[in-house]
Image 1 (cartoon, protein in one colour):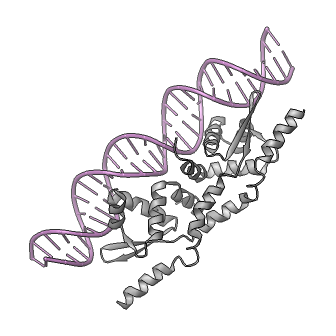
Image 2 (cartoon, rainbow over the protein chains, first blue to last red; image 1 turned 120 degrees about the vertical axis):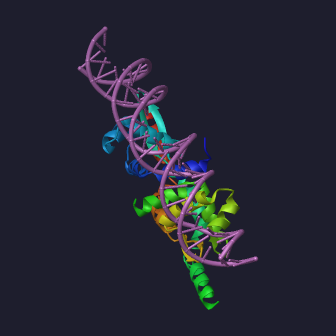
Image 3 (tube, rainbow over the protein chains, first blue to last red; image 1 turned 30 degrees about the horizontal axis):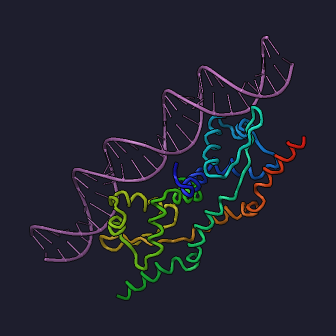
Length: 109
Length: 109
DNA sequence: TAAATTAGCAACCATAAAGTTGCGTATTAA
DNA sequence: TTAATACGCAACTTTATGGTTGCTAATTTA
């Protein structure tokens, strides 16, 4: 198993997975695997795989209920991504100044 | 070419790429491809590929200077990721309540 | 001018990833 | 108790990914 943060980044890297996650966040009720798959024009197994990866990343929780497995979104792990980005946010506003500085100094030289 | 946001998520999904990006953010001077590859115990071509993906995502800018290609980090595109996450941040604090609610109601039923 | 350096391009390899189908099993409904 | 439903597991296919090596071209240094 990979590290948590790696699995998190991997989980949100796939657009289909982001869509599934989004749908789970928006819905008020829990969705079973089959319900998700009808909603996404994808085979049930395809959804199962994505759910597994989302679950590994902690972004989706699953409760078993008879033959059903209901999926819930849990956005909490995204805080980690937020933390990762927080460091770079300080460079957002002056980021290309570095490039400008370089170009200016080399032109002057 | 994929969409911008997809390329962005893809770019930061790989841990090596995040490391390279981080090194470029931290360094005061620009780094050439060769300089990066010596720093990362990876072949020059491996680095070139990563830089290309980072460049596609807008996270790295390149200036050519003779036979050198100097790379600069540009964290600005990460704002998009931040925007994507902003929506989910409203669910961070009460996320698992959804699950709790479900479990409670089903137990009561 | 000859040698060294920086890098792109192409081919290649191994593995992972996204998705499918088929089949068996457990649970629910008729 | 039979039929339908929900699902997991395994196998398979296709394509992407991360990485390598070999070769060539351009630029810089001796």
